Length: 280
Image 1: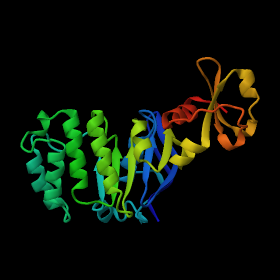
Image 2: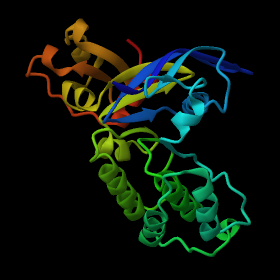
Image 3: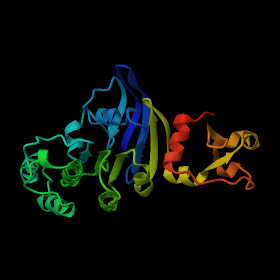
Image 4: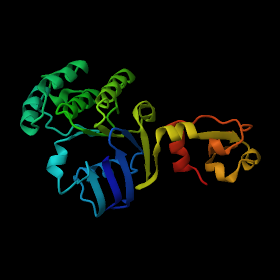
């Protein structure tokens, strides 16, 4: 079963469109959703949540149509956007009272435990909180009704490395339940290397790849050399090429390349740059 399935999603905007976006998030896994700013990550997420109306395509969450079963689906989803969308005159304690009315499964004890863990003041107005504090509050709000699926849009943006690490540990603890799933949109690819099972790359409204993280990190390699040296690589082994500092860099399938060629292990960021800026 897939927690999320998207087939041929299309949504047009002025000067930009999501073009036949298709990918799935298997239940019990973390999908890293990557792409540069403006690539279509947030637009895709907003279509999933029916905050933007798709033009055509199919979106299934928990095997249910995202519009027809919107209310029941949203009770099992926790969402974190890059901004906290609640009235700024409220404080965290007041939000607890509101959320009790919204979610039958709201867990006040868990919520205040997370606020204490993140050192978020309970009675300070949201407008007085730093960006980092707002993000930590947003994560506590998203998780405190015990959802089955977390949809995260840049949840670690603006946070220092220590707090980011704490939050990643919290997401990993959430994933101990094999029925839980996460869609994690982020430009901090090092966070995704720690937590993601799969990576989906979107560029200019189109999906360029959707692949197991282990496949990307362990089955791909980078060869750096002159044009002449790169020309000696088997053509079928080369996925993408781009100009490097001293010649040409090639992203290759390791098993198709002779061991005589010295390969470097790529990062998620390396692979993203090859697919976005490289050529075949």
